[in-house]
Length: 240
Image (tube, rainbow, N blue to C red; front, side, top):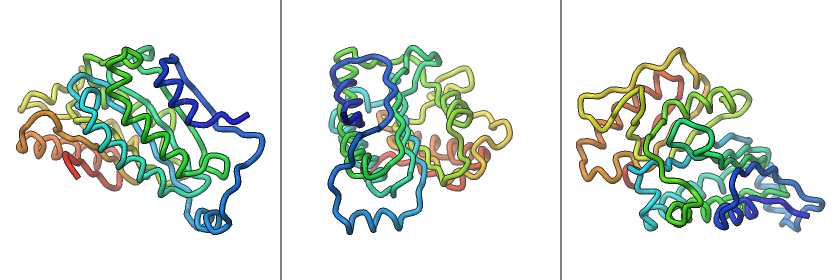
């Protein structure tokens, strides 16, 4: 019996609640020898994908934008080699019951990068439908910093080059900062919780504000924070 991300996606789109699925199979599917050789030459990496379900983020109600984000993230997943880790989470409110979707996999012949990428693309593109149907809950706050703190503790950057991708508008709205106010700033991180992490990406930065200057301001805030937190690189994209 196969338990793949396809089942996670199908269950989410059908409405099943807390999901924690490990990819396991009894027998490996047939795979081209040249594909196996190509994958074996790629160094394993870790990819953390986080979906912002807060009400300010167009990902939750703009199907065209959700498809665009989904396609870009799927491209990142499909480029990973075997033994790479993929983790998918949702965030918004600061409570576990609001964000109980999670998926973790190690890519292999049984969980091929192209297959996992296709299912993740389907899942992210389906976010507006999941929210509209009530299967995922649109959330009133945007706890990006608290979510990242949990990631640093539960997943971290040790052992593999790690990239964290946030499908988010980047507008922190929490006890730490209200970045929708032009005078607000992100607090400095305590220490370097993401030391040795390769990159932080925010896809959709400033999306929905309709303001190029706000996007630039938000990019500046997150660039400073990411560098101070230990990320080697930061990329904040409004469009691509």
